[in-house]
Length: 349
Ligand SMILES: NC(=O)c1ccc[n+]([C@@H]2O[C@H](COP(=O)([O-])OP(=O)(O)OC[C@H]3O[C@@H](n4cnc5c(N)ncnc54)[C@H](OP(=O)(O)O)[C@@H]3O)[C@@H](O)[C@H]2O)c1
Image 1 (cartoon, rainbow, N blue to C red):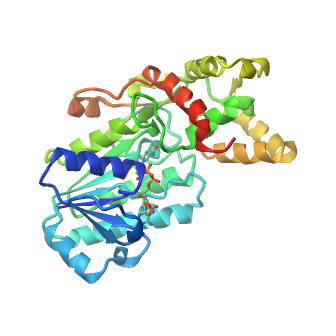
Image 2 (image 1 turned 180 degrees about the vertical axis):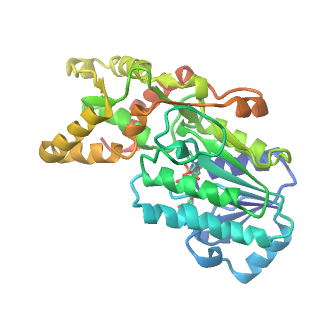
């Protein structure tokens, strides 16, 4: 039996579907906070619990069944909000992971724990980022990144064999560019469209590393069942297929400019700048900008500085294991922007 957390989320949900499809005999227990919202899925048993509760808050009978039957654990649940205070992010991401691992340490049949992490545990490091333990020395852009780095340390110290799979930022469902879950990247594109991003904190060589959910979930589903990856850290990232910010801006603008009404606004393209100048802009908008712009830039502030910290995630390990790299961002970015415009960013205008 597989014990999966985060099955109601974007990544966990995709992993669940793919693992069920790949193995017709697989049975899965999924940790859910609200059992009434779980749709019945054959071969899947919802187990009510919460990463924040001691022992995950599992009922005694569920705990006994899991102890008897679980062979694989895939931990994809997390608090993924970038703006959380550190103690809140830690409560779910670090202590929740610790609680799960403590339970798994008592389950005799567990062969491996697969921890779904983020490539951005690299935090403020720049340059080539290896598929290996990150030292944390450069610090992080937000508490989410830090809490995921701390959770990796908990996983690395686990009593059971583990593998860490680090996803880059997911921007669409698949290479068709469909978006079913909106996030900070999409918010940034929306602000660009409204002309609310006068500056982007990015040097000329900076790139944007993003991936489709399908690439990430199929990789996790494939790698979680392999028996030869214990102790490995793998990047599920665009890597060399990341798109330079300049090019991304160009492609985005091209899609916007197909609309004559938008063209008539003659919005200036954002200027690429350094972090210090961007921080000045943030401060001045905080003092004098309108409320919508202030709120928007506050949201971006937990994420935008990554653009000014150019890095390239190494993916040689992942590419060898999966037989191919992630699709290059250039191949689908235009379709993502088209989808965002058509879907109006999933929100009322
Ligand atoms: N999406 C990305 O771009 C991205 C990139 C890199 C890494 N990741 C990693 O991928 C994993 C999944 O992210 P996602 O994008 O799928 O996020 P998501 O769609 O927001 O899903 C988060 C999942 O975690 C569950 N969860 C949150 N707090 C919980 C708690 N206290 N107890 C039990 N379950 C809890 C949620 O359950 P409820 O339904 O009850 O809320 C949901 O199933 C995370 O570990 C994240 O760090 C994601």
